Amino acid sequence: MEALQWRLFPLFTLLLSFLLFFFFQHSPTLNQKQCSLLPYQHYWIASKRIVTPQGVISGLVEVKEGKIVSIVKEEEKDGKTKLENVIDYGDAVVMPGLIDVHAHLDDPGRSEWEGFPSGTKAAAAGGITTLVDMPLNSFPSTVTRETLELKLKAAESRIYVDVGFWGGLVPENAFNKSALEDLLNAGALGLKSFMCPSGINDFPMTNSSHIKEGLSVLAKYRSPLLVHAEKQPDPETNLGIEDISNDARSYSTYLKTRPPSWEEAAIKDLVTLTKDTRIGAPAEGAHLHIVHLSDSSSSLDLIKEAKKGGDSLTVETCPHYLAFSAEEIRDGDTRFKCSPPIRDAVNKEKLWKALVEGDLDMLSSDHSPTTPELKRLDDGDFLKAWGGISCLQFLLPVTWSYDQKYGVTLEQMALWWSERPAKLAGQKLKGAIAIGNYADIVVWNPDVDFDLDDSHHVYIKHPSISAYMGTKLSGKPVVFRFSPKNNSNLITKWLTFLALLVSLFHP
Image (cartoon, rainbow, N blue to C red):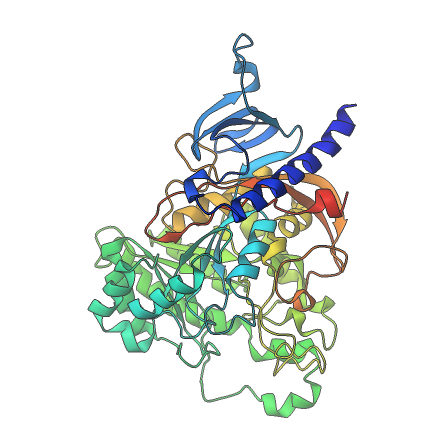
């Protein structure tokens, strides 16, 4: 009987959410504060596996008006007190919602690549309750107050999770302190720059002088600078690409065009600048964050040394660098092209070791979609295809599926995907199931396997370009909740939407 109840409960919850969703859609007087997955503002979430900063507990989380007001362990329950509005998820994992600090939603200007509606629906379906959108791939790029306001307007009433925005650091604004301050005052959570050509015309690359200026401004705001750390030895050279263009369908051809030495060269420059972020140094208060590290050798060693010296420095990697290796990428399968590239199996194992041992701080998606035409799926030309992995909906199951071999715990999952990303983005009331925090929660079943194929309901705009399609994964989101809140740096949307509609479509 208990097994039957467990199977029927998600379906009941799903049907209830649909009824509420359609009611909200057609209610002209409903405001954000009234919206809820449940028809009451005070309730309890029960589970045998609740992931908290103090460990995994069996117990209950009390939620009132969108915030966590108490956490009660099972053994501490007062049997005499009757609790009302209890939703019991049994063995399912209750965890803080994922926070993705590195996503490209391409809106406005290139919404045919993704867009706020499809991208944030995919995020919601994957257990992401907050994401931070990058300043490029949309058009225009977000490098001024005015362009940030365009993005805010494009997102209004079109998003399904909390969304924040990074501003862009480019040569045109790097030496203009007032322009950077204006961008940050308008709500940008921090800045992002490239040390190599970005592929986007209105987002040119920066050098060390630009980055130094950016850090000096960010120190006042105690905000981060995110950097794409690849540097060409000579930007005018093409590493002999023209000599190997006849083999453009081979992944090894592309891999040779972006060697680990590019990452190492960039990071060598960066760690000379991050000394200024130490306590008592000129840019104390600023923070530098290296995005999507791929090289697990010399580049990682440089980062480790800088951290030991007291530099305010963090680094992320992405699931695709941990899931795939160069040896398994077939000729012409341009779904796997990204920058920096997916490297060999030995490098992948070293990345896993660095993540588990704490040398890598967090994970992000670097969700960077485009159209199937620009991905060159037809001719498989790695040298001409757009570089980027489309993955936003699959982060939780992908991470869980590939990390089981390394003994990764639920606490580590919450650390990499919630707690540390929240800190980077300055979201003090997010990232953990803790009293006083927003009830940004994902409920998921780590013990369920599924095939990610054409029968699966996928929300990203172009499923065919995702490298994860066709894989077998473990860990299904069951339901999530995130709360309406006021934050000048986040657009907030309350969605009565189950994380994955698997209870109905994939029993």
